[in-house]
Image 1 (cartoon, rainbow, N blue to C red):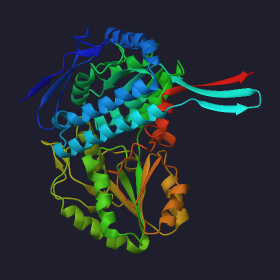
Image 2 (cartoon, helix red, strand yellow; image 1 turned 45 degrees about the horizontal axis):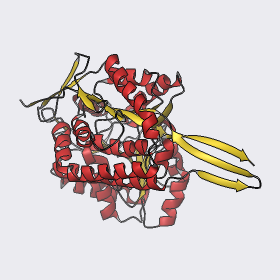
Image 3 (cartoon, rainbow, N blue to C red; image 1 turned 30 degrees about the horizontal axis):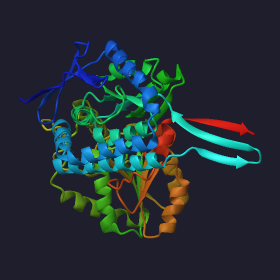
Image 4 (cartoon, rainbow, N blue to C red; image 1 turned 135 degrees about the vertical axis):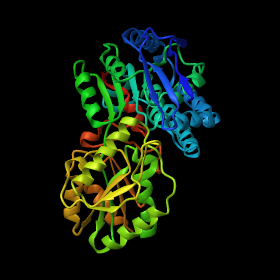
Amino acid sequence: MLKIKLKKLFYNNKWHLPNSKSIYKFSTSEGTMIEVPNCNNIDILNSVSAACNALEKFKKFSNSNRSKILKKISEIIKKNANLLAKKESIELGKNFNNEKKEMLTCANLWSHASLVTKKKTNKLIKKKNIDLYEIQEPVGVVALIIPWNFPMIVLSERLPYILGAGNSVVIKPSENGSLSIELFIKLIENIGLPIGTINYLTGDSNTGKNLIKNKNISMISFTGSTKNGKKIYKLASNGIKRLSLELGGKNPMVIFSDADLKKASKDIIYSFIHNAGQCCVSGSKLFIENEIFQIFVEKLKTDLNKIDQVQNITTISQYKKIKKIILKSIKDKVPIIYRKEKLFDDNKKIIYPIIFYPKNKKYYLEEEIFGPVLTVSPFKKMDELINEMNNTKFGLSALLWTQKKSKAIYLASKIKFGRIWINGNISQNFPELSIGGFKESGLNRETGDSGLRTYSEIKSMIINE
């Protein structure tokens, strides 16, 4: 059995052995054993102190200087895309070629952050005898907590904007997704930032909880489940700490009878089984216009049968959770309209795509499953569809297919979701657009023009002559 041990944390621009002797161990889907330190409060204190000391120096960097550093990091990621992709494919069981594409997406995010940082200016409004200024200042020390499903992507949607706004940071990746982040830190440790600007430690949820509770953390950026987001929200309330949360979703997809059914079928399949459904924005509820319901269901089944490669579930706990939900649905006799003869591969941690047709709502199918599980239902009227789509505590993403763009735009204007694809799929991501959710799917926005503002405090000045 291959063993990988991460032994050190990074602060003050040096690698240190942790004070903690506790170790987190887990086995990947391919059987690789990975060990990471469970950093303790002393490790957290050292990391946060380093970040605090760096703040004043980094605040003095010009936007142009910060922009140049972000651009350099973009080039480093692009140059080392193969190495970073290999780390994630080993740890997460992902396809290497898909991982390499993700690393190039990361490079684009850093490049975009470089451009918006360079263009950043304070707002000035001149009135008679009065100047009005709106100034963006750094929030302070940001705790960046990263999930296991897309470590480098999530980091790159946040960290360049955290730095572009002038903050320092303590990064804590998921205990099940640390390899690529550690390599990334090694690649950029001598990039030219003040000592202590970027710090990195590992550990489980207790490490994350203690990091959040540290009095010198000014802001928490977290991506993960709504359940854990609520815990962080509560912890942050003690100090009214700033938050940026991208949380769970139960993301609807809608296909109208006038859609390009061939293309829509491919987009829908990709959007619910890519990365085994382990994407925050994966589609999980499909609404099909009544007049094409049977035709399109058969089309989906035919196209799914052509797929011979599926992705494993990344963590054992997630595999068990999804399997339990599927078995409960079967026990409760929820109608199934598509499944393979083999549903599970316990050795490789694979769950094969399955489609349910619940006639009555089941609470466990209304929650985020984070796996290749889809429910379908027909609809007749637009108003009923809108009500049904909005009848959820989530509001992260939605996907729509129709050849009438005016219809899609009307529907998009009526539903409460943060990111909406029309006649496309979830592979389409652009750094120019802000991302984030409505309702219990999160707070604040990442990337786009919102990226820097999310990680800034806004100061207003009224200057009289």
